[in-house]
Length: 65
Image (cartoon, rainbow, N blue to C red; front, side, top):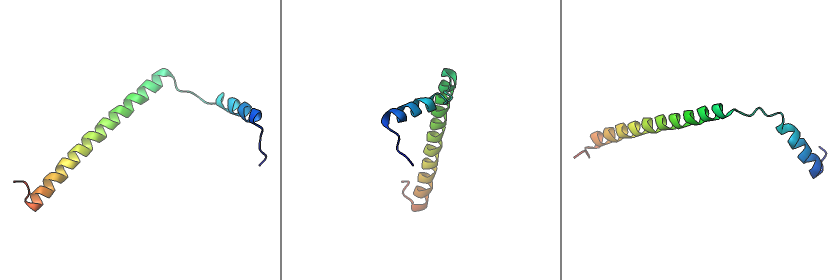
């Protein structure tokens, strides 16, 4: 593979970036909101799973007081 000089490389990068389909502002906002919602749901799930496991271990070992 032949090495391109830096100017040729920059030209190729610019050419490739024109082919990128950039998301709209609305799509970006919606995707960001969905990420936050899914992160919150995952946090709630793991909180509940942790509480359930903690309850089970305390019940099993008699550490619940």
